[in-house]
Image 1 (cartoon, rainbow, N blue to C red):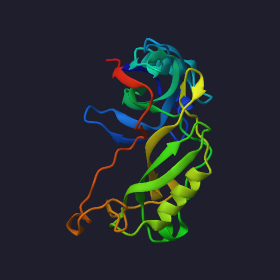
Image 2 (image 1 turned 90 degrees about the vertical axis):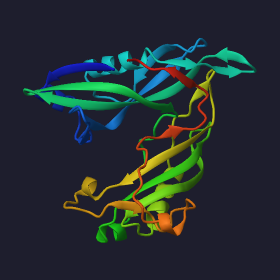
Image 3 (image 1 turned 120 degrees about the vertical axis):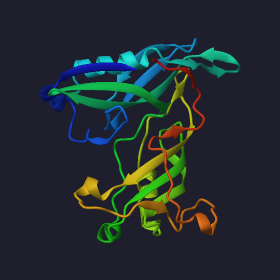
Length: 255
């Protein structure tokens, strides 16, 4: 796992307000969001040939750290008719920060890889759910087409405050993804389709809410088939997008 340190003032210049701490790990490191994404070119041997940090405004130190984290990754290469070939994927890195005596350290580690994330659309928070102080975590499945659009979008799991019905969250999520473009993975220079699962969080705190809220429970109308006895049992969702059939398979990550 790669790491760098700098003074707090410098860190705050690098990390915008969106990169806020969410929760601390057992060793005192705190997750920061959003994730860092690196366009990663993989050669026919499965090694990273080139890596480029997506986005603008990052200090050179952060860009260097991201590239150093991605470079040691090793993949089973993509193939065409059984012959290994080059490919392009997008590696997602989780950032964690740690403060000590007025200085911040930042470390990055691999989370997943797949199509490049979309930045041009995000589901609008349903007004009725704001008034009802209802939050949600919705997981969708979809296909990223070679043209960079989402198709076959459907909700596979959902949690809401107190297990309330979440249809308005589902509608908002599917509407946003149907209007979004994404960067597809490529094999031998040609874009390919990928099936993905993506979690979407609706948090009142992120739109100016405050105070305590009921815990999330399986939504009463969650598409997942469960028994009535399980309907109000708290559950845990993965918080990162997952490519279900990326042409590249990871075989080694950096220490």
